[in-house]
Amino acid sequence: MEEKIKTIEGMRRPHENPTEWRLRRAFLVKNFDNLDAERLECLSHCFVNHELYGVGYPSKFRRLGDGIVDSIYRGRSIVKRLCTTLFALFSLKIKVNINHLSEQFCSLIEIEQ
Image (cartoon, rainbow, N blue to C red; front, side):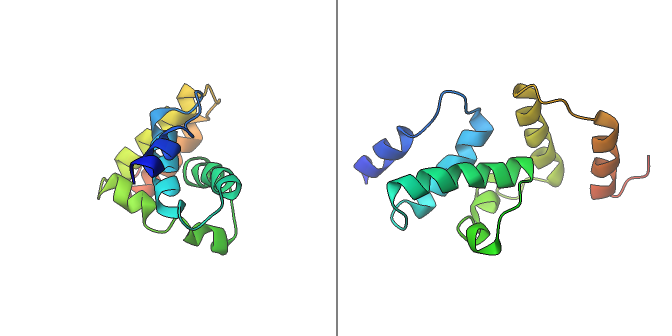
């Protein structure tokens, strides 16, 4: 077990922010024994892209990550999840249309602007 954790911790990349690593690490732990190393590495990055940046993947892939987000956020509200995602985007210096996000955010929590 200790060797498994050591291997997983060694897979962290210097460019990953804490949010990305937390998600990717959870994916790696869940699927470590089910996928070969190369596929595990690749799909773990795909998982982060899907969860944080909205990249679409087939349902077969998404099943590999079932329950991970819920276990990480442990019931946190959609507001905290959205803020975490926004922080990740801003830390990567990705330009974000704040007005568009504001509209989407308000519709998510059912508040009129």
